[in-house]
Image (cartoon, rainbow, N blue to C red; front, top):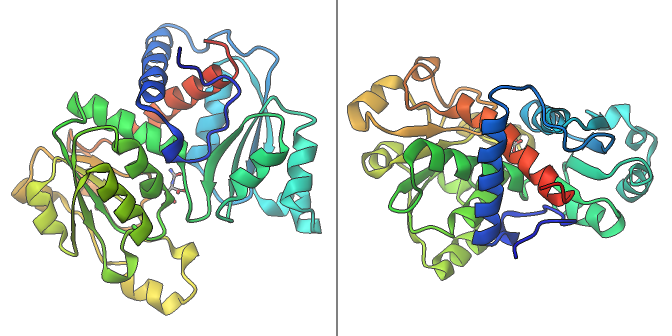
Length: 309
Ligand code: NCD
């Protein structure tokens, strides 16, 4: 019997195929149930702490919306500056404190490994909403769920990942959840921003067919799904290097219509300039549906981890 009760959600690698199927089934069920009411009475009285030491719009508001739509309560902070981190408190002490208040903790922090560190001291389950350039497992699940919804099946697809594959935590976690399916992977990035070699070699070990290229147009000719990402400015030590690379890839409507009119287009958002706004009205531009899917996935995770479904 598959169960997520009491589990931490720390990385993309941790999920079995059975767990992914369960999360998606519950997410689909919650979506159906919310068609005719605003909230489900599953988490009354429970408290989710949303601890965001790094900027966020979607991940934080999506976790908060998910908890509210399960009739639970939310506490938290949205910047390190407004927490005692600004006074020099360690992450461990902050987590030990919040553990006295909350039943479940969602967090984002600039350090790789911070969510694991938090999970090692918290009694409450910890959900990693992004640890620096490390992992972002809840985003990976909602991305996979979106591909499945948009295309019917993940098997048989060619997925193109484009942009900052070195620093992008959504793609680091994403490839770990896609590995359960038979798909082809094309990775498009500047040489300086390639997917870390340890991840690529692990993927080859899983048997994933991989092609790496610097040309987005070449990749699009073969791709079914494009997962566009932002060049992660905040991870660059050298601002000039960021300036040189920030315009590396820009997807336009003209490119989609010319090369691959039925391309499914995803982006974790925020976008800076990598998808022009005239793409938004294409029926296959799925990034705002992807945002909505995130609420159902996070509702499913919270309810499953708290043993409510
Ligand atoms: C991403 C993130 O924060 O890693 N956004 C998100 O969570 N939806 C991607 C990004 O910031 O570029």
